[in-house]
Image (cartoon, rainbow, N blue to C red; front, side, top):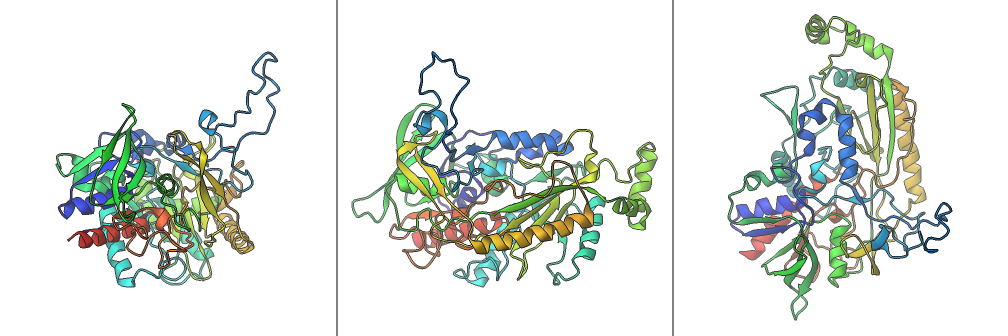
Length: 519
């Protein structure tokens, strides 16, 4: 259940071991190759700002509080209760959501490939002390991180030729000399490869990358069913195994039963516990210990001093001489086709946050017209929230979402300790921003809406105690021998780094455990 990169990691491993896999996905297929990153299109690489609306158009908000504002502009003869409909399925609002405890930007992507149809491809490893779950042996982390990086094609060097990347790295290394060796300012680990046939372009990894040969079709042991929603997992008489899955064909509005030896739910950190709740599988920790990545954000225009360095430094001499020969009227000493920078400051002990300095497509942070994009860089710092059982997502037995599944409702807040860390994180971002440039009007430093990074985790967390976790260290649901979970929801620790690589590592490990258990 779920066709994002985590479901694809399970499928790839299981088919490779000789298993037959059926994958169901509520969304449709948006590209010729299933789950391709839509950012690979030429127009979005030429102008990343255009991709912002693609991202917005594919995100479905999960919990929108009902509006308490009176509809004063309505025709007096209209139905008097207009605007006060209490059914969430009718107007996409959730009457149970407290707006002050919400994660307003939390969203799902209903599509083959899930969020990987538009993700940023950032793939850092979690810090071994600050973030990593200690219930998995170090040798397993090393093995499965390495395998995940190989599958995704993770590299820190695809943007090394960027003039701006080298300028930013040099400037920030001067500003942050205290960072320890190995954790200094460097290229961001990305699941991306520069194209050899057209070096101006790259190929961003998507779920099709994780599928590997399965994305090419022709594998009889793999079936992908778009527009199919799993609505319930039905247990056998013992209650200790799943007997079949109820799946709704959304195109034909009919229901089918799928019987299998094992079941995997990898539908995201909110929709995975939603399916368990709808199935009557409700362990004490379900939906609890929710974490997310609070962020700080700003955009700056590069300092004149940095631009002058580009114009006078010998390390850029060859690039600039060739560019000026072709475009003598361009006064800016940065080639028009200069790759966008992708710079990283890793998590370190005492700094439970990580930083990305780049120019990428996000659903926030637009560049205004008439500003040369070569002068603009985005700064995003991602912080850590400690897992607490009171931070959670719950599911209604009354109200339903767009797919007639139990409506999710968030109950989330930052602790005083979280707030203190975020304050320090903002201070560090300000330090970096002032070392690079001046603030772009309208993009001054701020804390964006909670949930915008789309990195909710912990809702079906891994652990060694069934009272405080949903799955064991093999990613198997406690008490149900043939049900495994995948995705960011499994991660049990407070983290700051992007979670996808860690979730793929855990999915590959779980698939191996499933294969071993099945003989």
